[in-house]
Length: 244
Image (cartoon, rainbow, N blue to C red; front, side, top):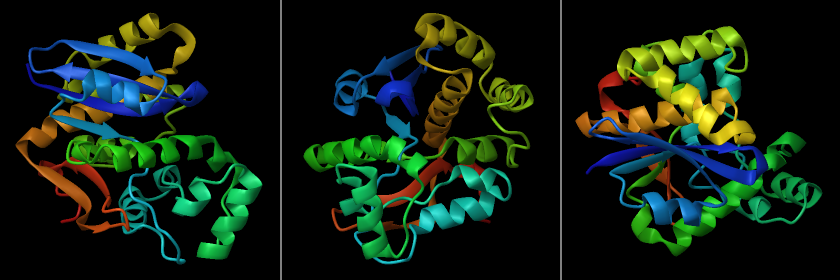
């Protein structure tokens, strides 16, 4: 039975995954690391994950996918696409060391709050280096890009606010009826491990992954490739024509 997965980071350095089967079944689970997630869901047709894949080694130029995503999302949603540290900074032991390295190699320090997801970036980088066969089916995306693709416009409200969550669930419900129920039951199942916006984001990624069955597009249209052969891209359903 074919299925598709969306993955978002959540509290405690864990990964929240929502899986959708083509017979209407779904599941929501939290994994301690991406290796366990792949063991469970590696047979998926496509896994879209909200974490940077493909890193600069040096230089002041940001990843083109991040620059283009900000342009498409416009203000204020563009602020959800953060500046990605260079690879050597990602492997540093402390934020102070990482920030110093990033400044030396790229000319930019990065905010301390970014340090909170560096572990996930490093974990994904290590995983894809050790599991090269996963690279074609575990791809980077971004929830706000997915909502833009599904609705035709950037979301108006902050996802942490009630009106922002309602706005996003309305988009998902139109595309995939039953989405509101998935988020409600997912919260009950996972209790306090995840927030409602985490589940909405992971579900948006899963819905987008399913819809790429009818055509897949990337930001940028021709992705860059980093020194490890990883594509620097954001994947979304091709019917959206975001770059037209």
